[in-house]
Image (cartoon, rainbow, N blue to C red; front, side):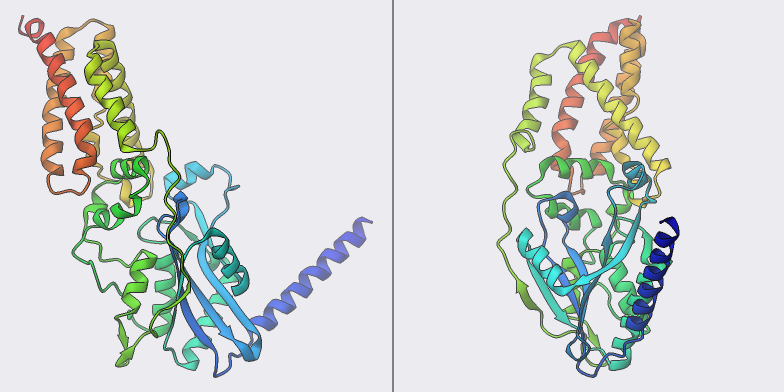
Length: 377
């Protein structure tokens, strides 16, 4: 029985290899078409920014396949740690256009198509590249939020096919990455707050890299190649009015303000010390992840001045009843907070961080006043 199983699996492997090899050697007809599919945004975290895929159609060869670079496996061991570190492997995948269409129809997400003006050799080259990638280690890549994702991978393989960097960003190049990303979190308050906090200096650079699906769609509408548009006018495949995010009693601005207001109104030293300890713990996390992670977006995070690890010292000095230590730690923290406020003056996330700045300032000033006399003595 064991031998029969081995023989069957071997035969299945050889049969699959033959079929795959045959498919990869298909010559596209003159009537074949290559298009970029842009998928609208959704309310799940993984779908907030939309999606990009490539469609290859050839009626003569009965081909209608969609290729994308946005596939990942939730069952990957240590998934969260690998995602945080920045070495999570994404992969290229392929499915039929019908399956692709039905998936987005079910999710009620818009789909737009732009047929590319490519020569027959270029279509064939792209088709071969995509099939070759699926059958080799090229299908895997290390995901990076800005530098390497489902859109940048499509841009790269198209530019390789064209032989030069034709597809580039044509709009909003003066905006920072943070300014570009901010509106995508419109109905997701704590996701907006969280990304504002965890992203560091890199996202304050000018957003010159083409890394979002809707930006690619916009650029393809304006780019010219060989003195003609690189793509035909976009065609709407599916269109839905984006559904509002489900109402959440906690994931909103009012809960955020209520919690922070309660800390100020209660005006209890133990409450403030606990609050500062949690903020300091978060600041320590930001500090560690900035060194641990390969994600450049997490490096040089000045938000550590708001979530200052020095806050943890306040807890230590409070438990040890060392008023002098509390005074000087609070003084150092309020100076750091002032520097942070100045850094945020021209940043898009100033308003969302402002309530924490105010609560931290009130708490630190109170601690400075309460412990000033002891420190002076």
